[in-house]
Image (cartoon, rainbow, N blue to C red; front, side, top):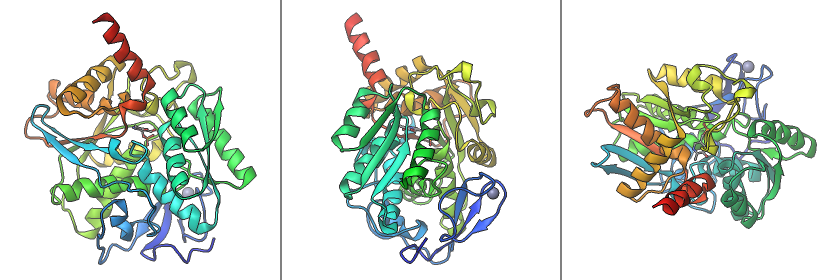
Length: 378
Ligand SMILES: Cc1ncc(COP(=O)(O)O)c(C=O)c1O
Ligand SMILES: [Zn+2]
């Protein structure tokens, strides 16, 4: 791969399992051992300039920004709920995934690809389609047929080539990998393309900057494949290596009771347990970034919390009615987890908790149905 356009501060990629190092132009996706690759930067003289996520170009694989404004989202404090909320619903396609898509699409363009693919429970695909549309690239998105109508509609509106399959997300992921290989598509799949985590880490940079580099004690992250949470950890690790922060936050991974492999410390789930949750974005039986997510949560001194669909729905309503932020069920899981941790006294009043509100409720069909159901019985 010709990498002239790559950020020279990215020194190498290192395998998260076996530690093998690669030059950025030596490898495109994962290590021979199957391990996911992590970026390694020269952390000296890092400067942040500009407004949206491209402000962090010194710590991204490529600096050429995309047209749409991605990142630069607000961090709100609400006394009523005594937490800080990072509102990622404000991204162009209304989820945090735009941060990863922006980096990957920027790279795809520079590498000369015209077509980019991914498998998705919904948001990642929608996000890829959105950023590709704005950069005149074609997107190919593999989603379960059961993905929410709103997300499917969004995909079609952005002009994506939608492959809606009668399969689970886990199966779509494998299909996407083999089709992309066959057809020569640049593959954005999470935990396969090494740069999605780098895009996602920019949310951590923003949280730290918004708090003037005073690191919050706890960060609550909804976990499906486990890439967002590893992105958050990578972001704080980069900041520490640059000397911008002294402390590290404790990471709390939040999973649905009906699909909680990582909370059980497993990278895989018995298939017959299925994905019994309405929180589709975290309905992942085989978390592709499980190894790294478990490592990162452990390293942070944190743990996983599971919440029921009912708790997520209650928290979705609480969040919307107290703050004006309408989250999807998966994102509201963070609020449910904070409430649980408080009631079980694992966190107290002096702890500064950030909940990452990863995606909008407006495109969560299950949440919309639950809300309509409430209205009917009111
Ligand atoms: C809104 C939202 N929150 C959380 C997640 C979970 O992220 P990850 O799969 O990286 O753990 C997703 C993934 O699709 C998502 O769309
Ligand atoms: Zn390896």
